[in-house]
Length: 309
Image 1 (cartoon, rainbow, N blue to C red):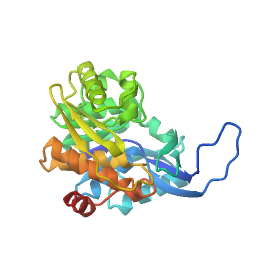
Image 2: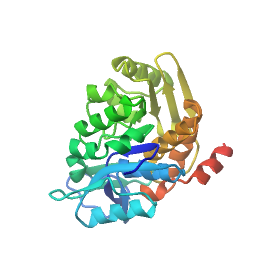
Image 3: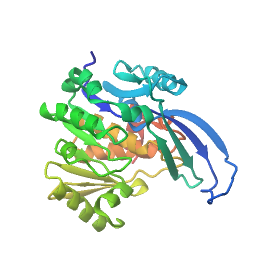
Image 4: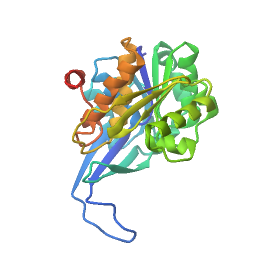
């Protein structure tokens, strides 16, 4: 069994990345500019982001018995991670995502989670010893709520930190939120939580406070605002973290790099503010490269960029 200080329970998805000049109109056929196949999925991305910081991490998830599943397992092993707790769904295909990347560096993603949504409570129970040894757990919403709830409860009951990236956004499960320590929505997700646009720093601060009041067990909300930076909010304070400026070409996995590095820096004993500054650097670096896993920075890359800020 695996015993690592950080665990990630989440999705493993093969990304078919298509670069396009713009979003096509309804009924329009348009030429794309480039197609690439990359391993991805928020769970795999976050696990690899952590591994590239030199920290032991356990990856828990599920793939299909198909060419995409084999590609995803190869990506895990290439990072010298174990796929012992990556299960195989015989009746389901592997998850597939289709990110459309635009010339301005923004993207839009169509997701078919498939095997990821068949991750069950039984799978989580098989991973229980590994989860009980973890000091930090990372979760996302590309797996069923019941699997996320159980994993969070196992780690929280032992005093561990649970970080939830609420993406792709859906109504947050109240029982899951009772175990979440840190919530890391992006701008769109924060807006969906509060039901209104969030633009200025005052808007972000007010929206974050509303979410914190809604979930009394939640200690911290970190709103990631892309090239603007991030805001750390607790019930009684807010701190703005400036963005690390880069020439972004593809934001896929930037949020996953942020969460992975945030977890590793907290594990090393950094303050929440310092950890978030490193995480912002990691997210920015990930946006400078095409694809998910290929974009995730190493420890030395994050350190080097941080010292030049």
